[in-house]
Image (tube, rainbow, N blue to C red):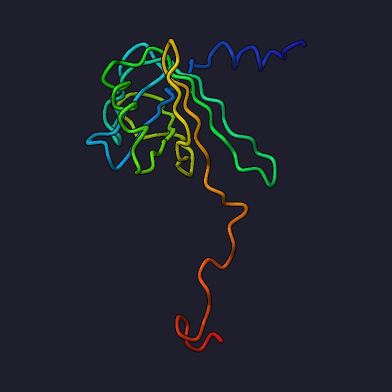
Length: 158
């Protein structure tokens, strides 16, 4: 493929963009959320706090109709405190939620995020870290309207 002179000039003058992918694990049983960033150094943000550097792979859910998407995350080399916290909450009765965000620079607000928080359905400890499976809420199969319209709840509607 041959690039035009304008494309070559645009690529030559473009500043490289680095984005930081982050995960935040929250649960009612945790005193503080577990925050990790896919980077080699910690990330301090304006809206969510400090993220610990680890390596992780995120496999985004399917987007087919009628399928409840599963988010898969492979986290390697977690700090001992994070592994112990995840192990402790994996047996908890309170649901564990994941917030995925992307940042373009430190000390800024998130530039992109998942609009819903997937709920963790499985945490498997591996030799190098943990594998986490989370499910998105069933937004496609949700019944609507969500509350029944009756004369008692909405007088005049019936």
